[in-house]
Length: 151
Length: 131
Image (cartoon, rainbow over all chains, first blue to last red):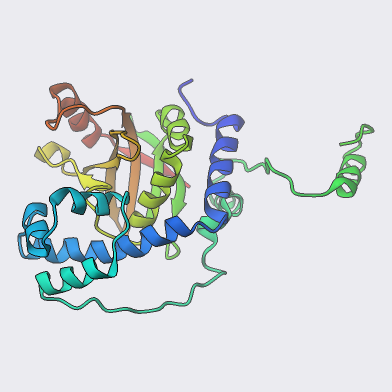
């Protein structure tokens, strides 16, 4: 199979995004908070030309612990954040942004995106692979579609 | 001949697009659906969409001028050591990250000769982006 334009492939893709992005995942949220802090750590460390080994020595830990943090296999604690601040001579600013439900569609509804994009280019056709209607609605859909068998 | 890539995700401000090479999507997408890889890919997508730095997740494959636009996504959880080589294109203030090729079980610290030549080839690909 050389192309990914079949319906089976798109179904997999749609399911993947929907199941992954709609449910609240506390572990993921924890990692993202950490990645935001580590991104700043990495930026400042790069500016100061510090490698992982230097960084580890500065905060009194091992380079492998730093790697585990960046890989997301361990979660950073407040003490380590404080040590990073001291070692890099910086202060992490905290800013709360209101999540906008209307804007956050890219993570939540791939179908909507596909539909919008199809209007523009027409390369993909979107099919809903996981209809959420109940039994009664299924019946109506079947009848309206002209099929006699129960859905 | 230009290759094609389709969009699978983008950030709220539509400044970063994550795309897949159409020709290699049949190997890349099932891999991203695997247990364990899916959550790691979710992290990588969020890191890219928020424009965060993390060399352990996404890093330039920096060894040659011919591959300046080639980056690698790193999948390292659960004793895995896999890479997805990506071509990054920036224009009109937008960043397009095309996932081009999957490399499983990277073994040595050095990039093998064969992979180096693949990366150079990836760096030379031209894309038609499909949305």
